[in-house]
Each structure stands twice: as structure tokens, then as C-alpha cells.
Length: 288
Image (cartoon, rainbow, N blue to C red):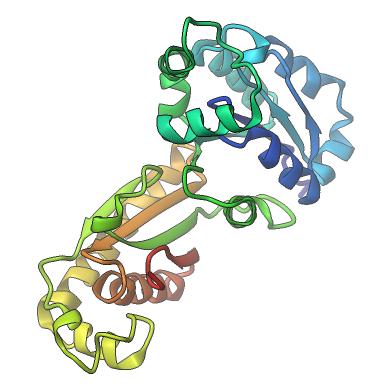
């Protein structure tokens, strides 16, 4: 069976890393068209040789420089492409306002949305893109990501030589005291579990280490909790896939992000892999 053509739309807030994402996708074998107005997305796909398109894949980068960007415009083009047999995925890059202000002050470039202040420009653009963000297939908050981290996120989503029918699931542990990640689809709080931090010999370790993992998972409530999440995801994932969602980010949080959340995320990842899911497990705060 011939591979289904894949079109990736890369968009998001100005300053959130769209140009970097476009370069990463080029490295992953995509032909990238930058700064394309939404109304021309379908035309770009039409001009591509679909035989080559299926092998190399096409990505278009769209931002506020292209004029007024609304979800209705994108949706219209995406629906038409999907009717023509082209699979589409939307990647939305976000960052918090303070980080965006810092980036623009650092590079001294004008914001594409004109307003009296930089903060007003960002607020206007955020409102303009709210629907696009809410309907994105892959949402990445770059506020605390290095270029290397962003590359890894995109590789997780697109590095496979061809799009797979199964969903890619990312399980991330984190500490609430360091702030909750903003680009998660589902968040589970494990602060109700016994805390290895208060066991002197376990405190220097993390949930990746067997003594900590054994301590956390020796609790019957912890085992039941992971089992119930596993069952919930077994129910949810097929329905997400039916709706066209290709990438699911699951967060597991505890107080510091070193012990309980790490152990639970590792165990959840192990169970998801055992049932045939494509899973990546990451630990944001384990080394803090």
C-alpha cells in the first residue's frame, strides 16, 4: 500500500521557536515552506508531486507575518487536503509572555503584530491564535526548552520514516513546585503517595533508581493508581486516534519531581509499551 502523504503545519506565537522547528523538520526529511499564507497551503500541496511528497513529506510554517490567521482558514484548507487523501498535523509553538518579551528585547526585532507596546502585541496575537492552539495536534511550550530540547520533542513526534497509525505517547514527570508544564494533554497528581524524600537513604536518589521505585510501588494505592491510569488510557487512546490525534502528552507530578512522579511515570511507560504503544518517557525535574 502506498504511503499516505503527510503535511505538517507549523505555527504558534512569534518568538516561540517556529523558525527553529522548521529547521528541525528539514533535518527530519521534510520539505519546508516558510511564511506561507493559510490560503496558499492547499495550493502548495497541489503543486507538490504526490509521489515525492509521500516520501519526503511537506511542512509549511505559518505565523502572523502572513496576515490574519484564524482557525477557520486553517480548518478549511486542512479538511480539503484530508478529503484529497493528505494526512495533516498541526504543530503549535507556545511560550509564556515573560519569556517572549525577553526574547524580543534580546534580539531587538519588531513584533509582527503592531500595537503600542510589546506586551500588547503578544496579548493580541495570543487571542488571535487561541482557536489554532486549542485544536493543534502537537502543542509544545518552549518557555524552558533549549534548541536541543525542542529538537528532541519534534523528533519524538516525527522522526519515524513514515507516519504510523498508532498514537505517539509522551509521559513526563515534573515537580509542582517548579511549575506545571503548559503543553500537557492529561495531568496526574501523585502527591498523595508516601514521599521517599523523607527517607534519608532514598533522598539523594531518584525514581529511576530501583530502591526508590520499589518504595513507591510497594504501596498498594500506587499500584492501583497506575493500573487505573493504564485502563483510562487504553480507553481514551483509540478514540483520540479515531479523531485524528497523533500525539498525546501525559504529565505525572509530585512535589519536587524527583521521586514519586518519576517512579510512576516509568511504570506507566513500561505498561503502555507492553500493550504496543509508541511511548517516550522524560523527567523534567529529576536532576534539580
